[in-house]
Image (cartoon, rainbow, N blue to C red; front, side):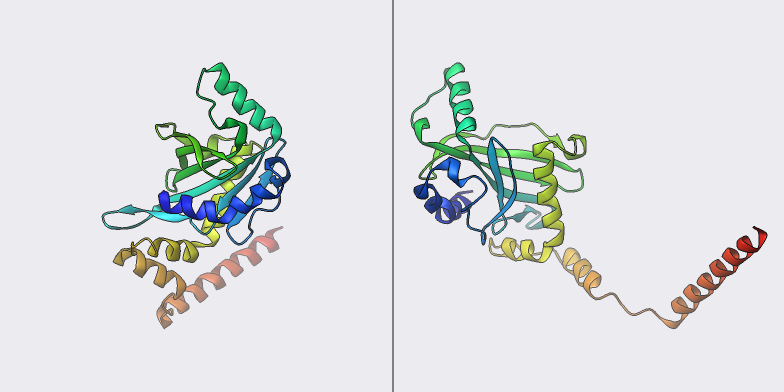
Length: 223
């Protein structure tokens, strides 16, 4: 987490010195680090594509677990809403006059189709956490989220990107010291370079195709 936060800070701190949170929504976020997904009246939604990594299991990469640092850059309306809610709950407001957004750390279970927000940090204009929540146990079933729901769009966009960039994510994870398990490595290599079909298999496929064509022609003749 600390390493990601340092990179988050290095990548986006500059944008807050150029006009504030409201102007930053939907633009000025470094495109070489962050992937923009959507902007609403409340916030701009981004994920850090340079720091997406797989989880760890039995000393190897866990290709079923995806860990994703994300940021939301708040509009003035959202900032006011967050502050008002904290005031109503009688929570500390120290530094909240400099609130600009939030960082959420997401853990996806790809097989189960679920996500958990493992950490939520409110951030000030210097990208330091004003408060931190790490005790969230809510497991969100992505399939249950309506297609047009903001969170659903965000989570599905991250998963789509991840499915298309597995090699990049493996490289990111290798930088943390984790390696692919021998079984996963072999499976990925076989998917990239499938073994050539032997003559027997080709002959079988050809016969099957001929039979299917004959059946189609017979059905057409009956009509």
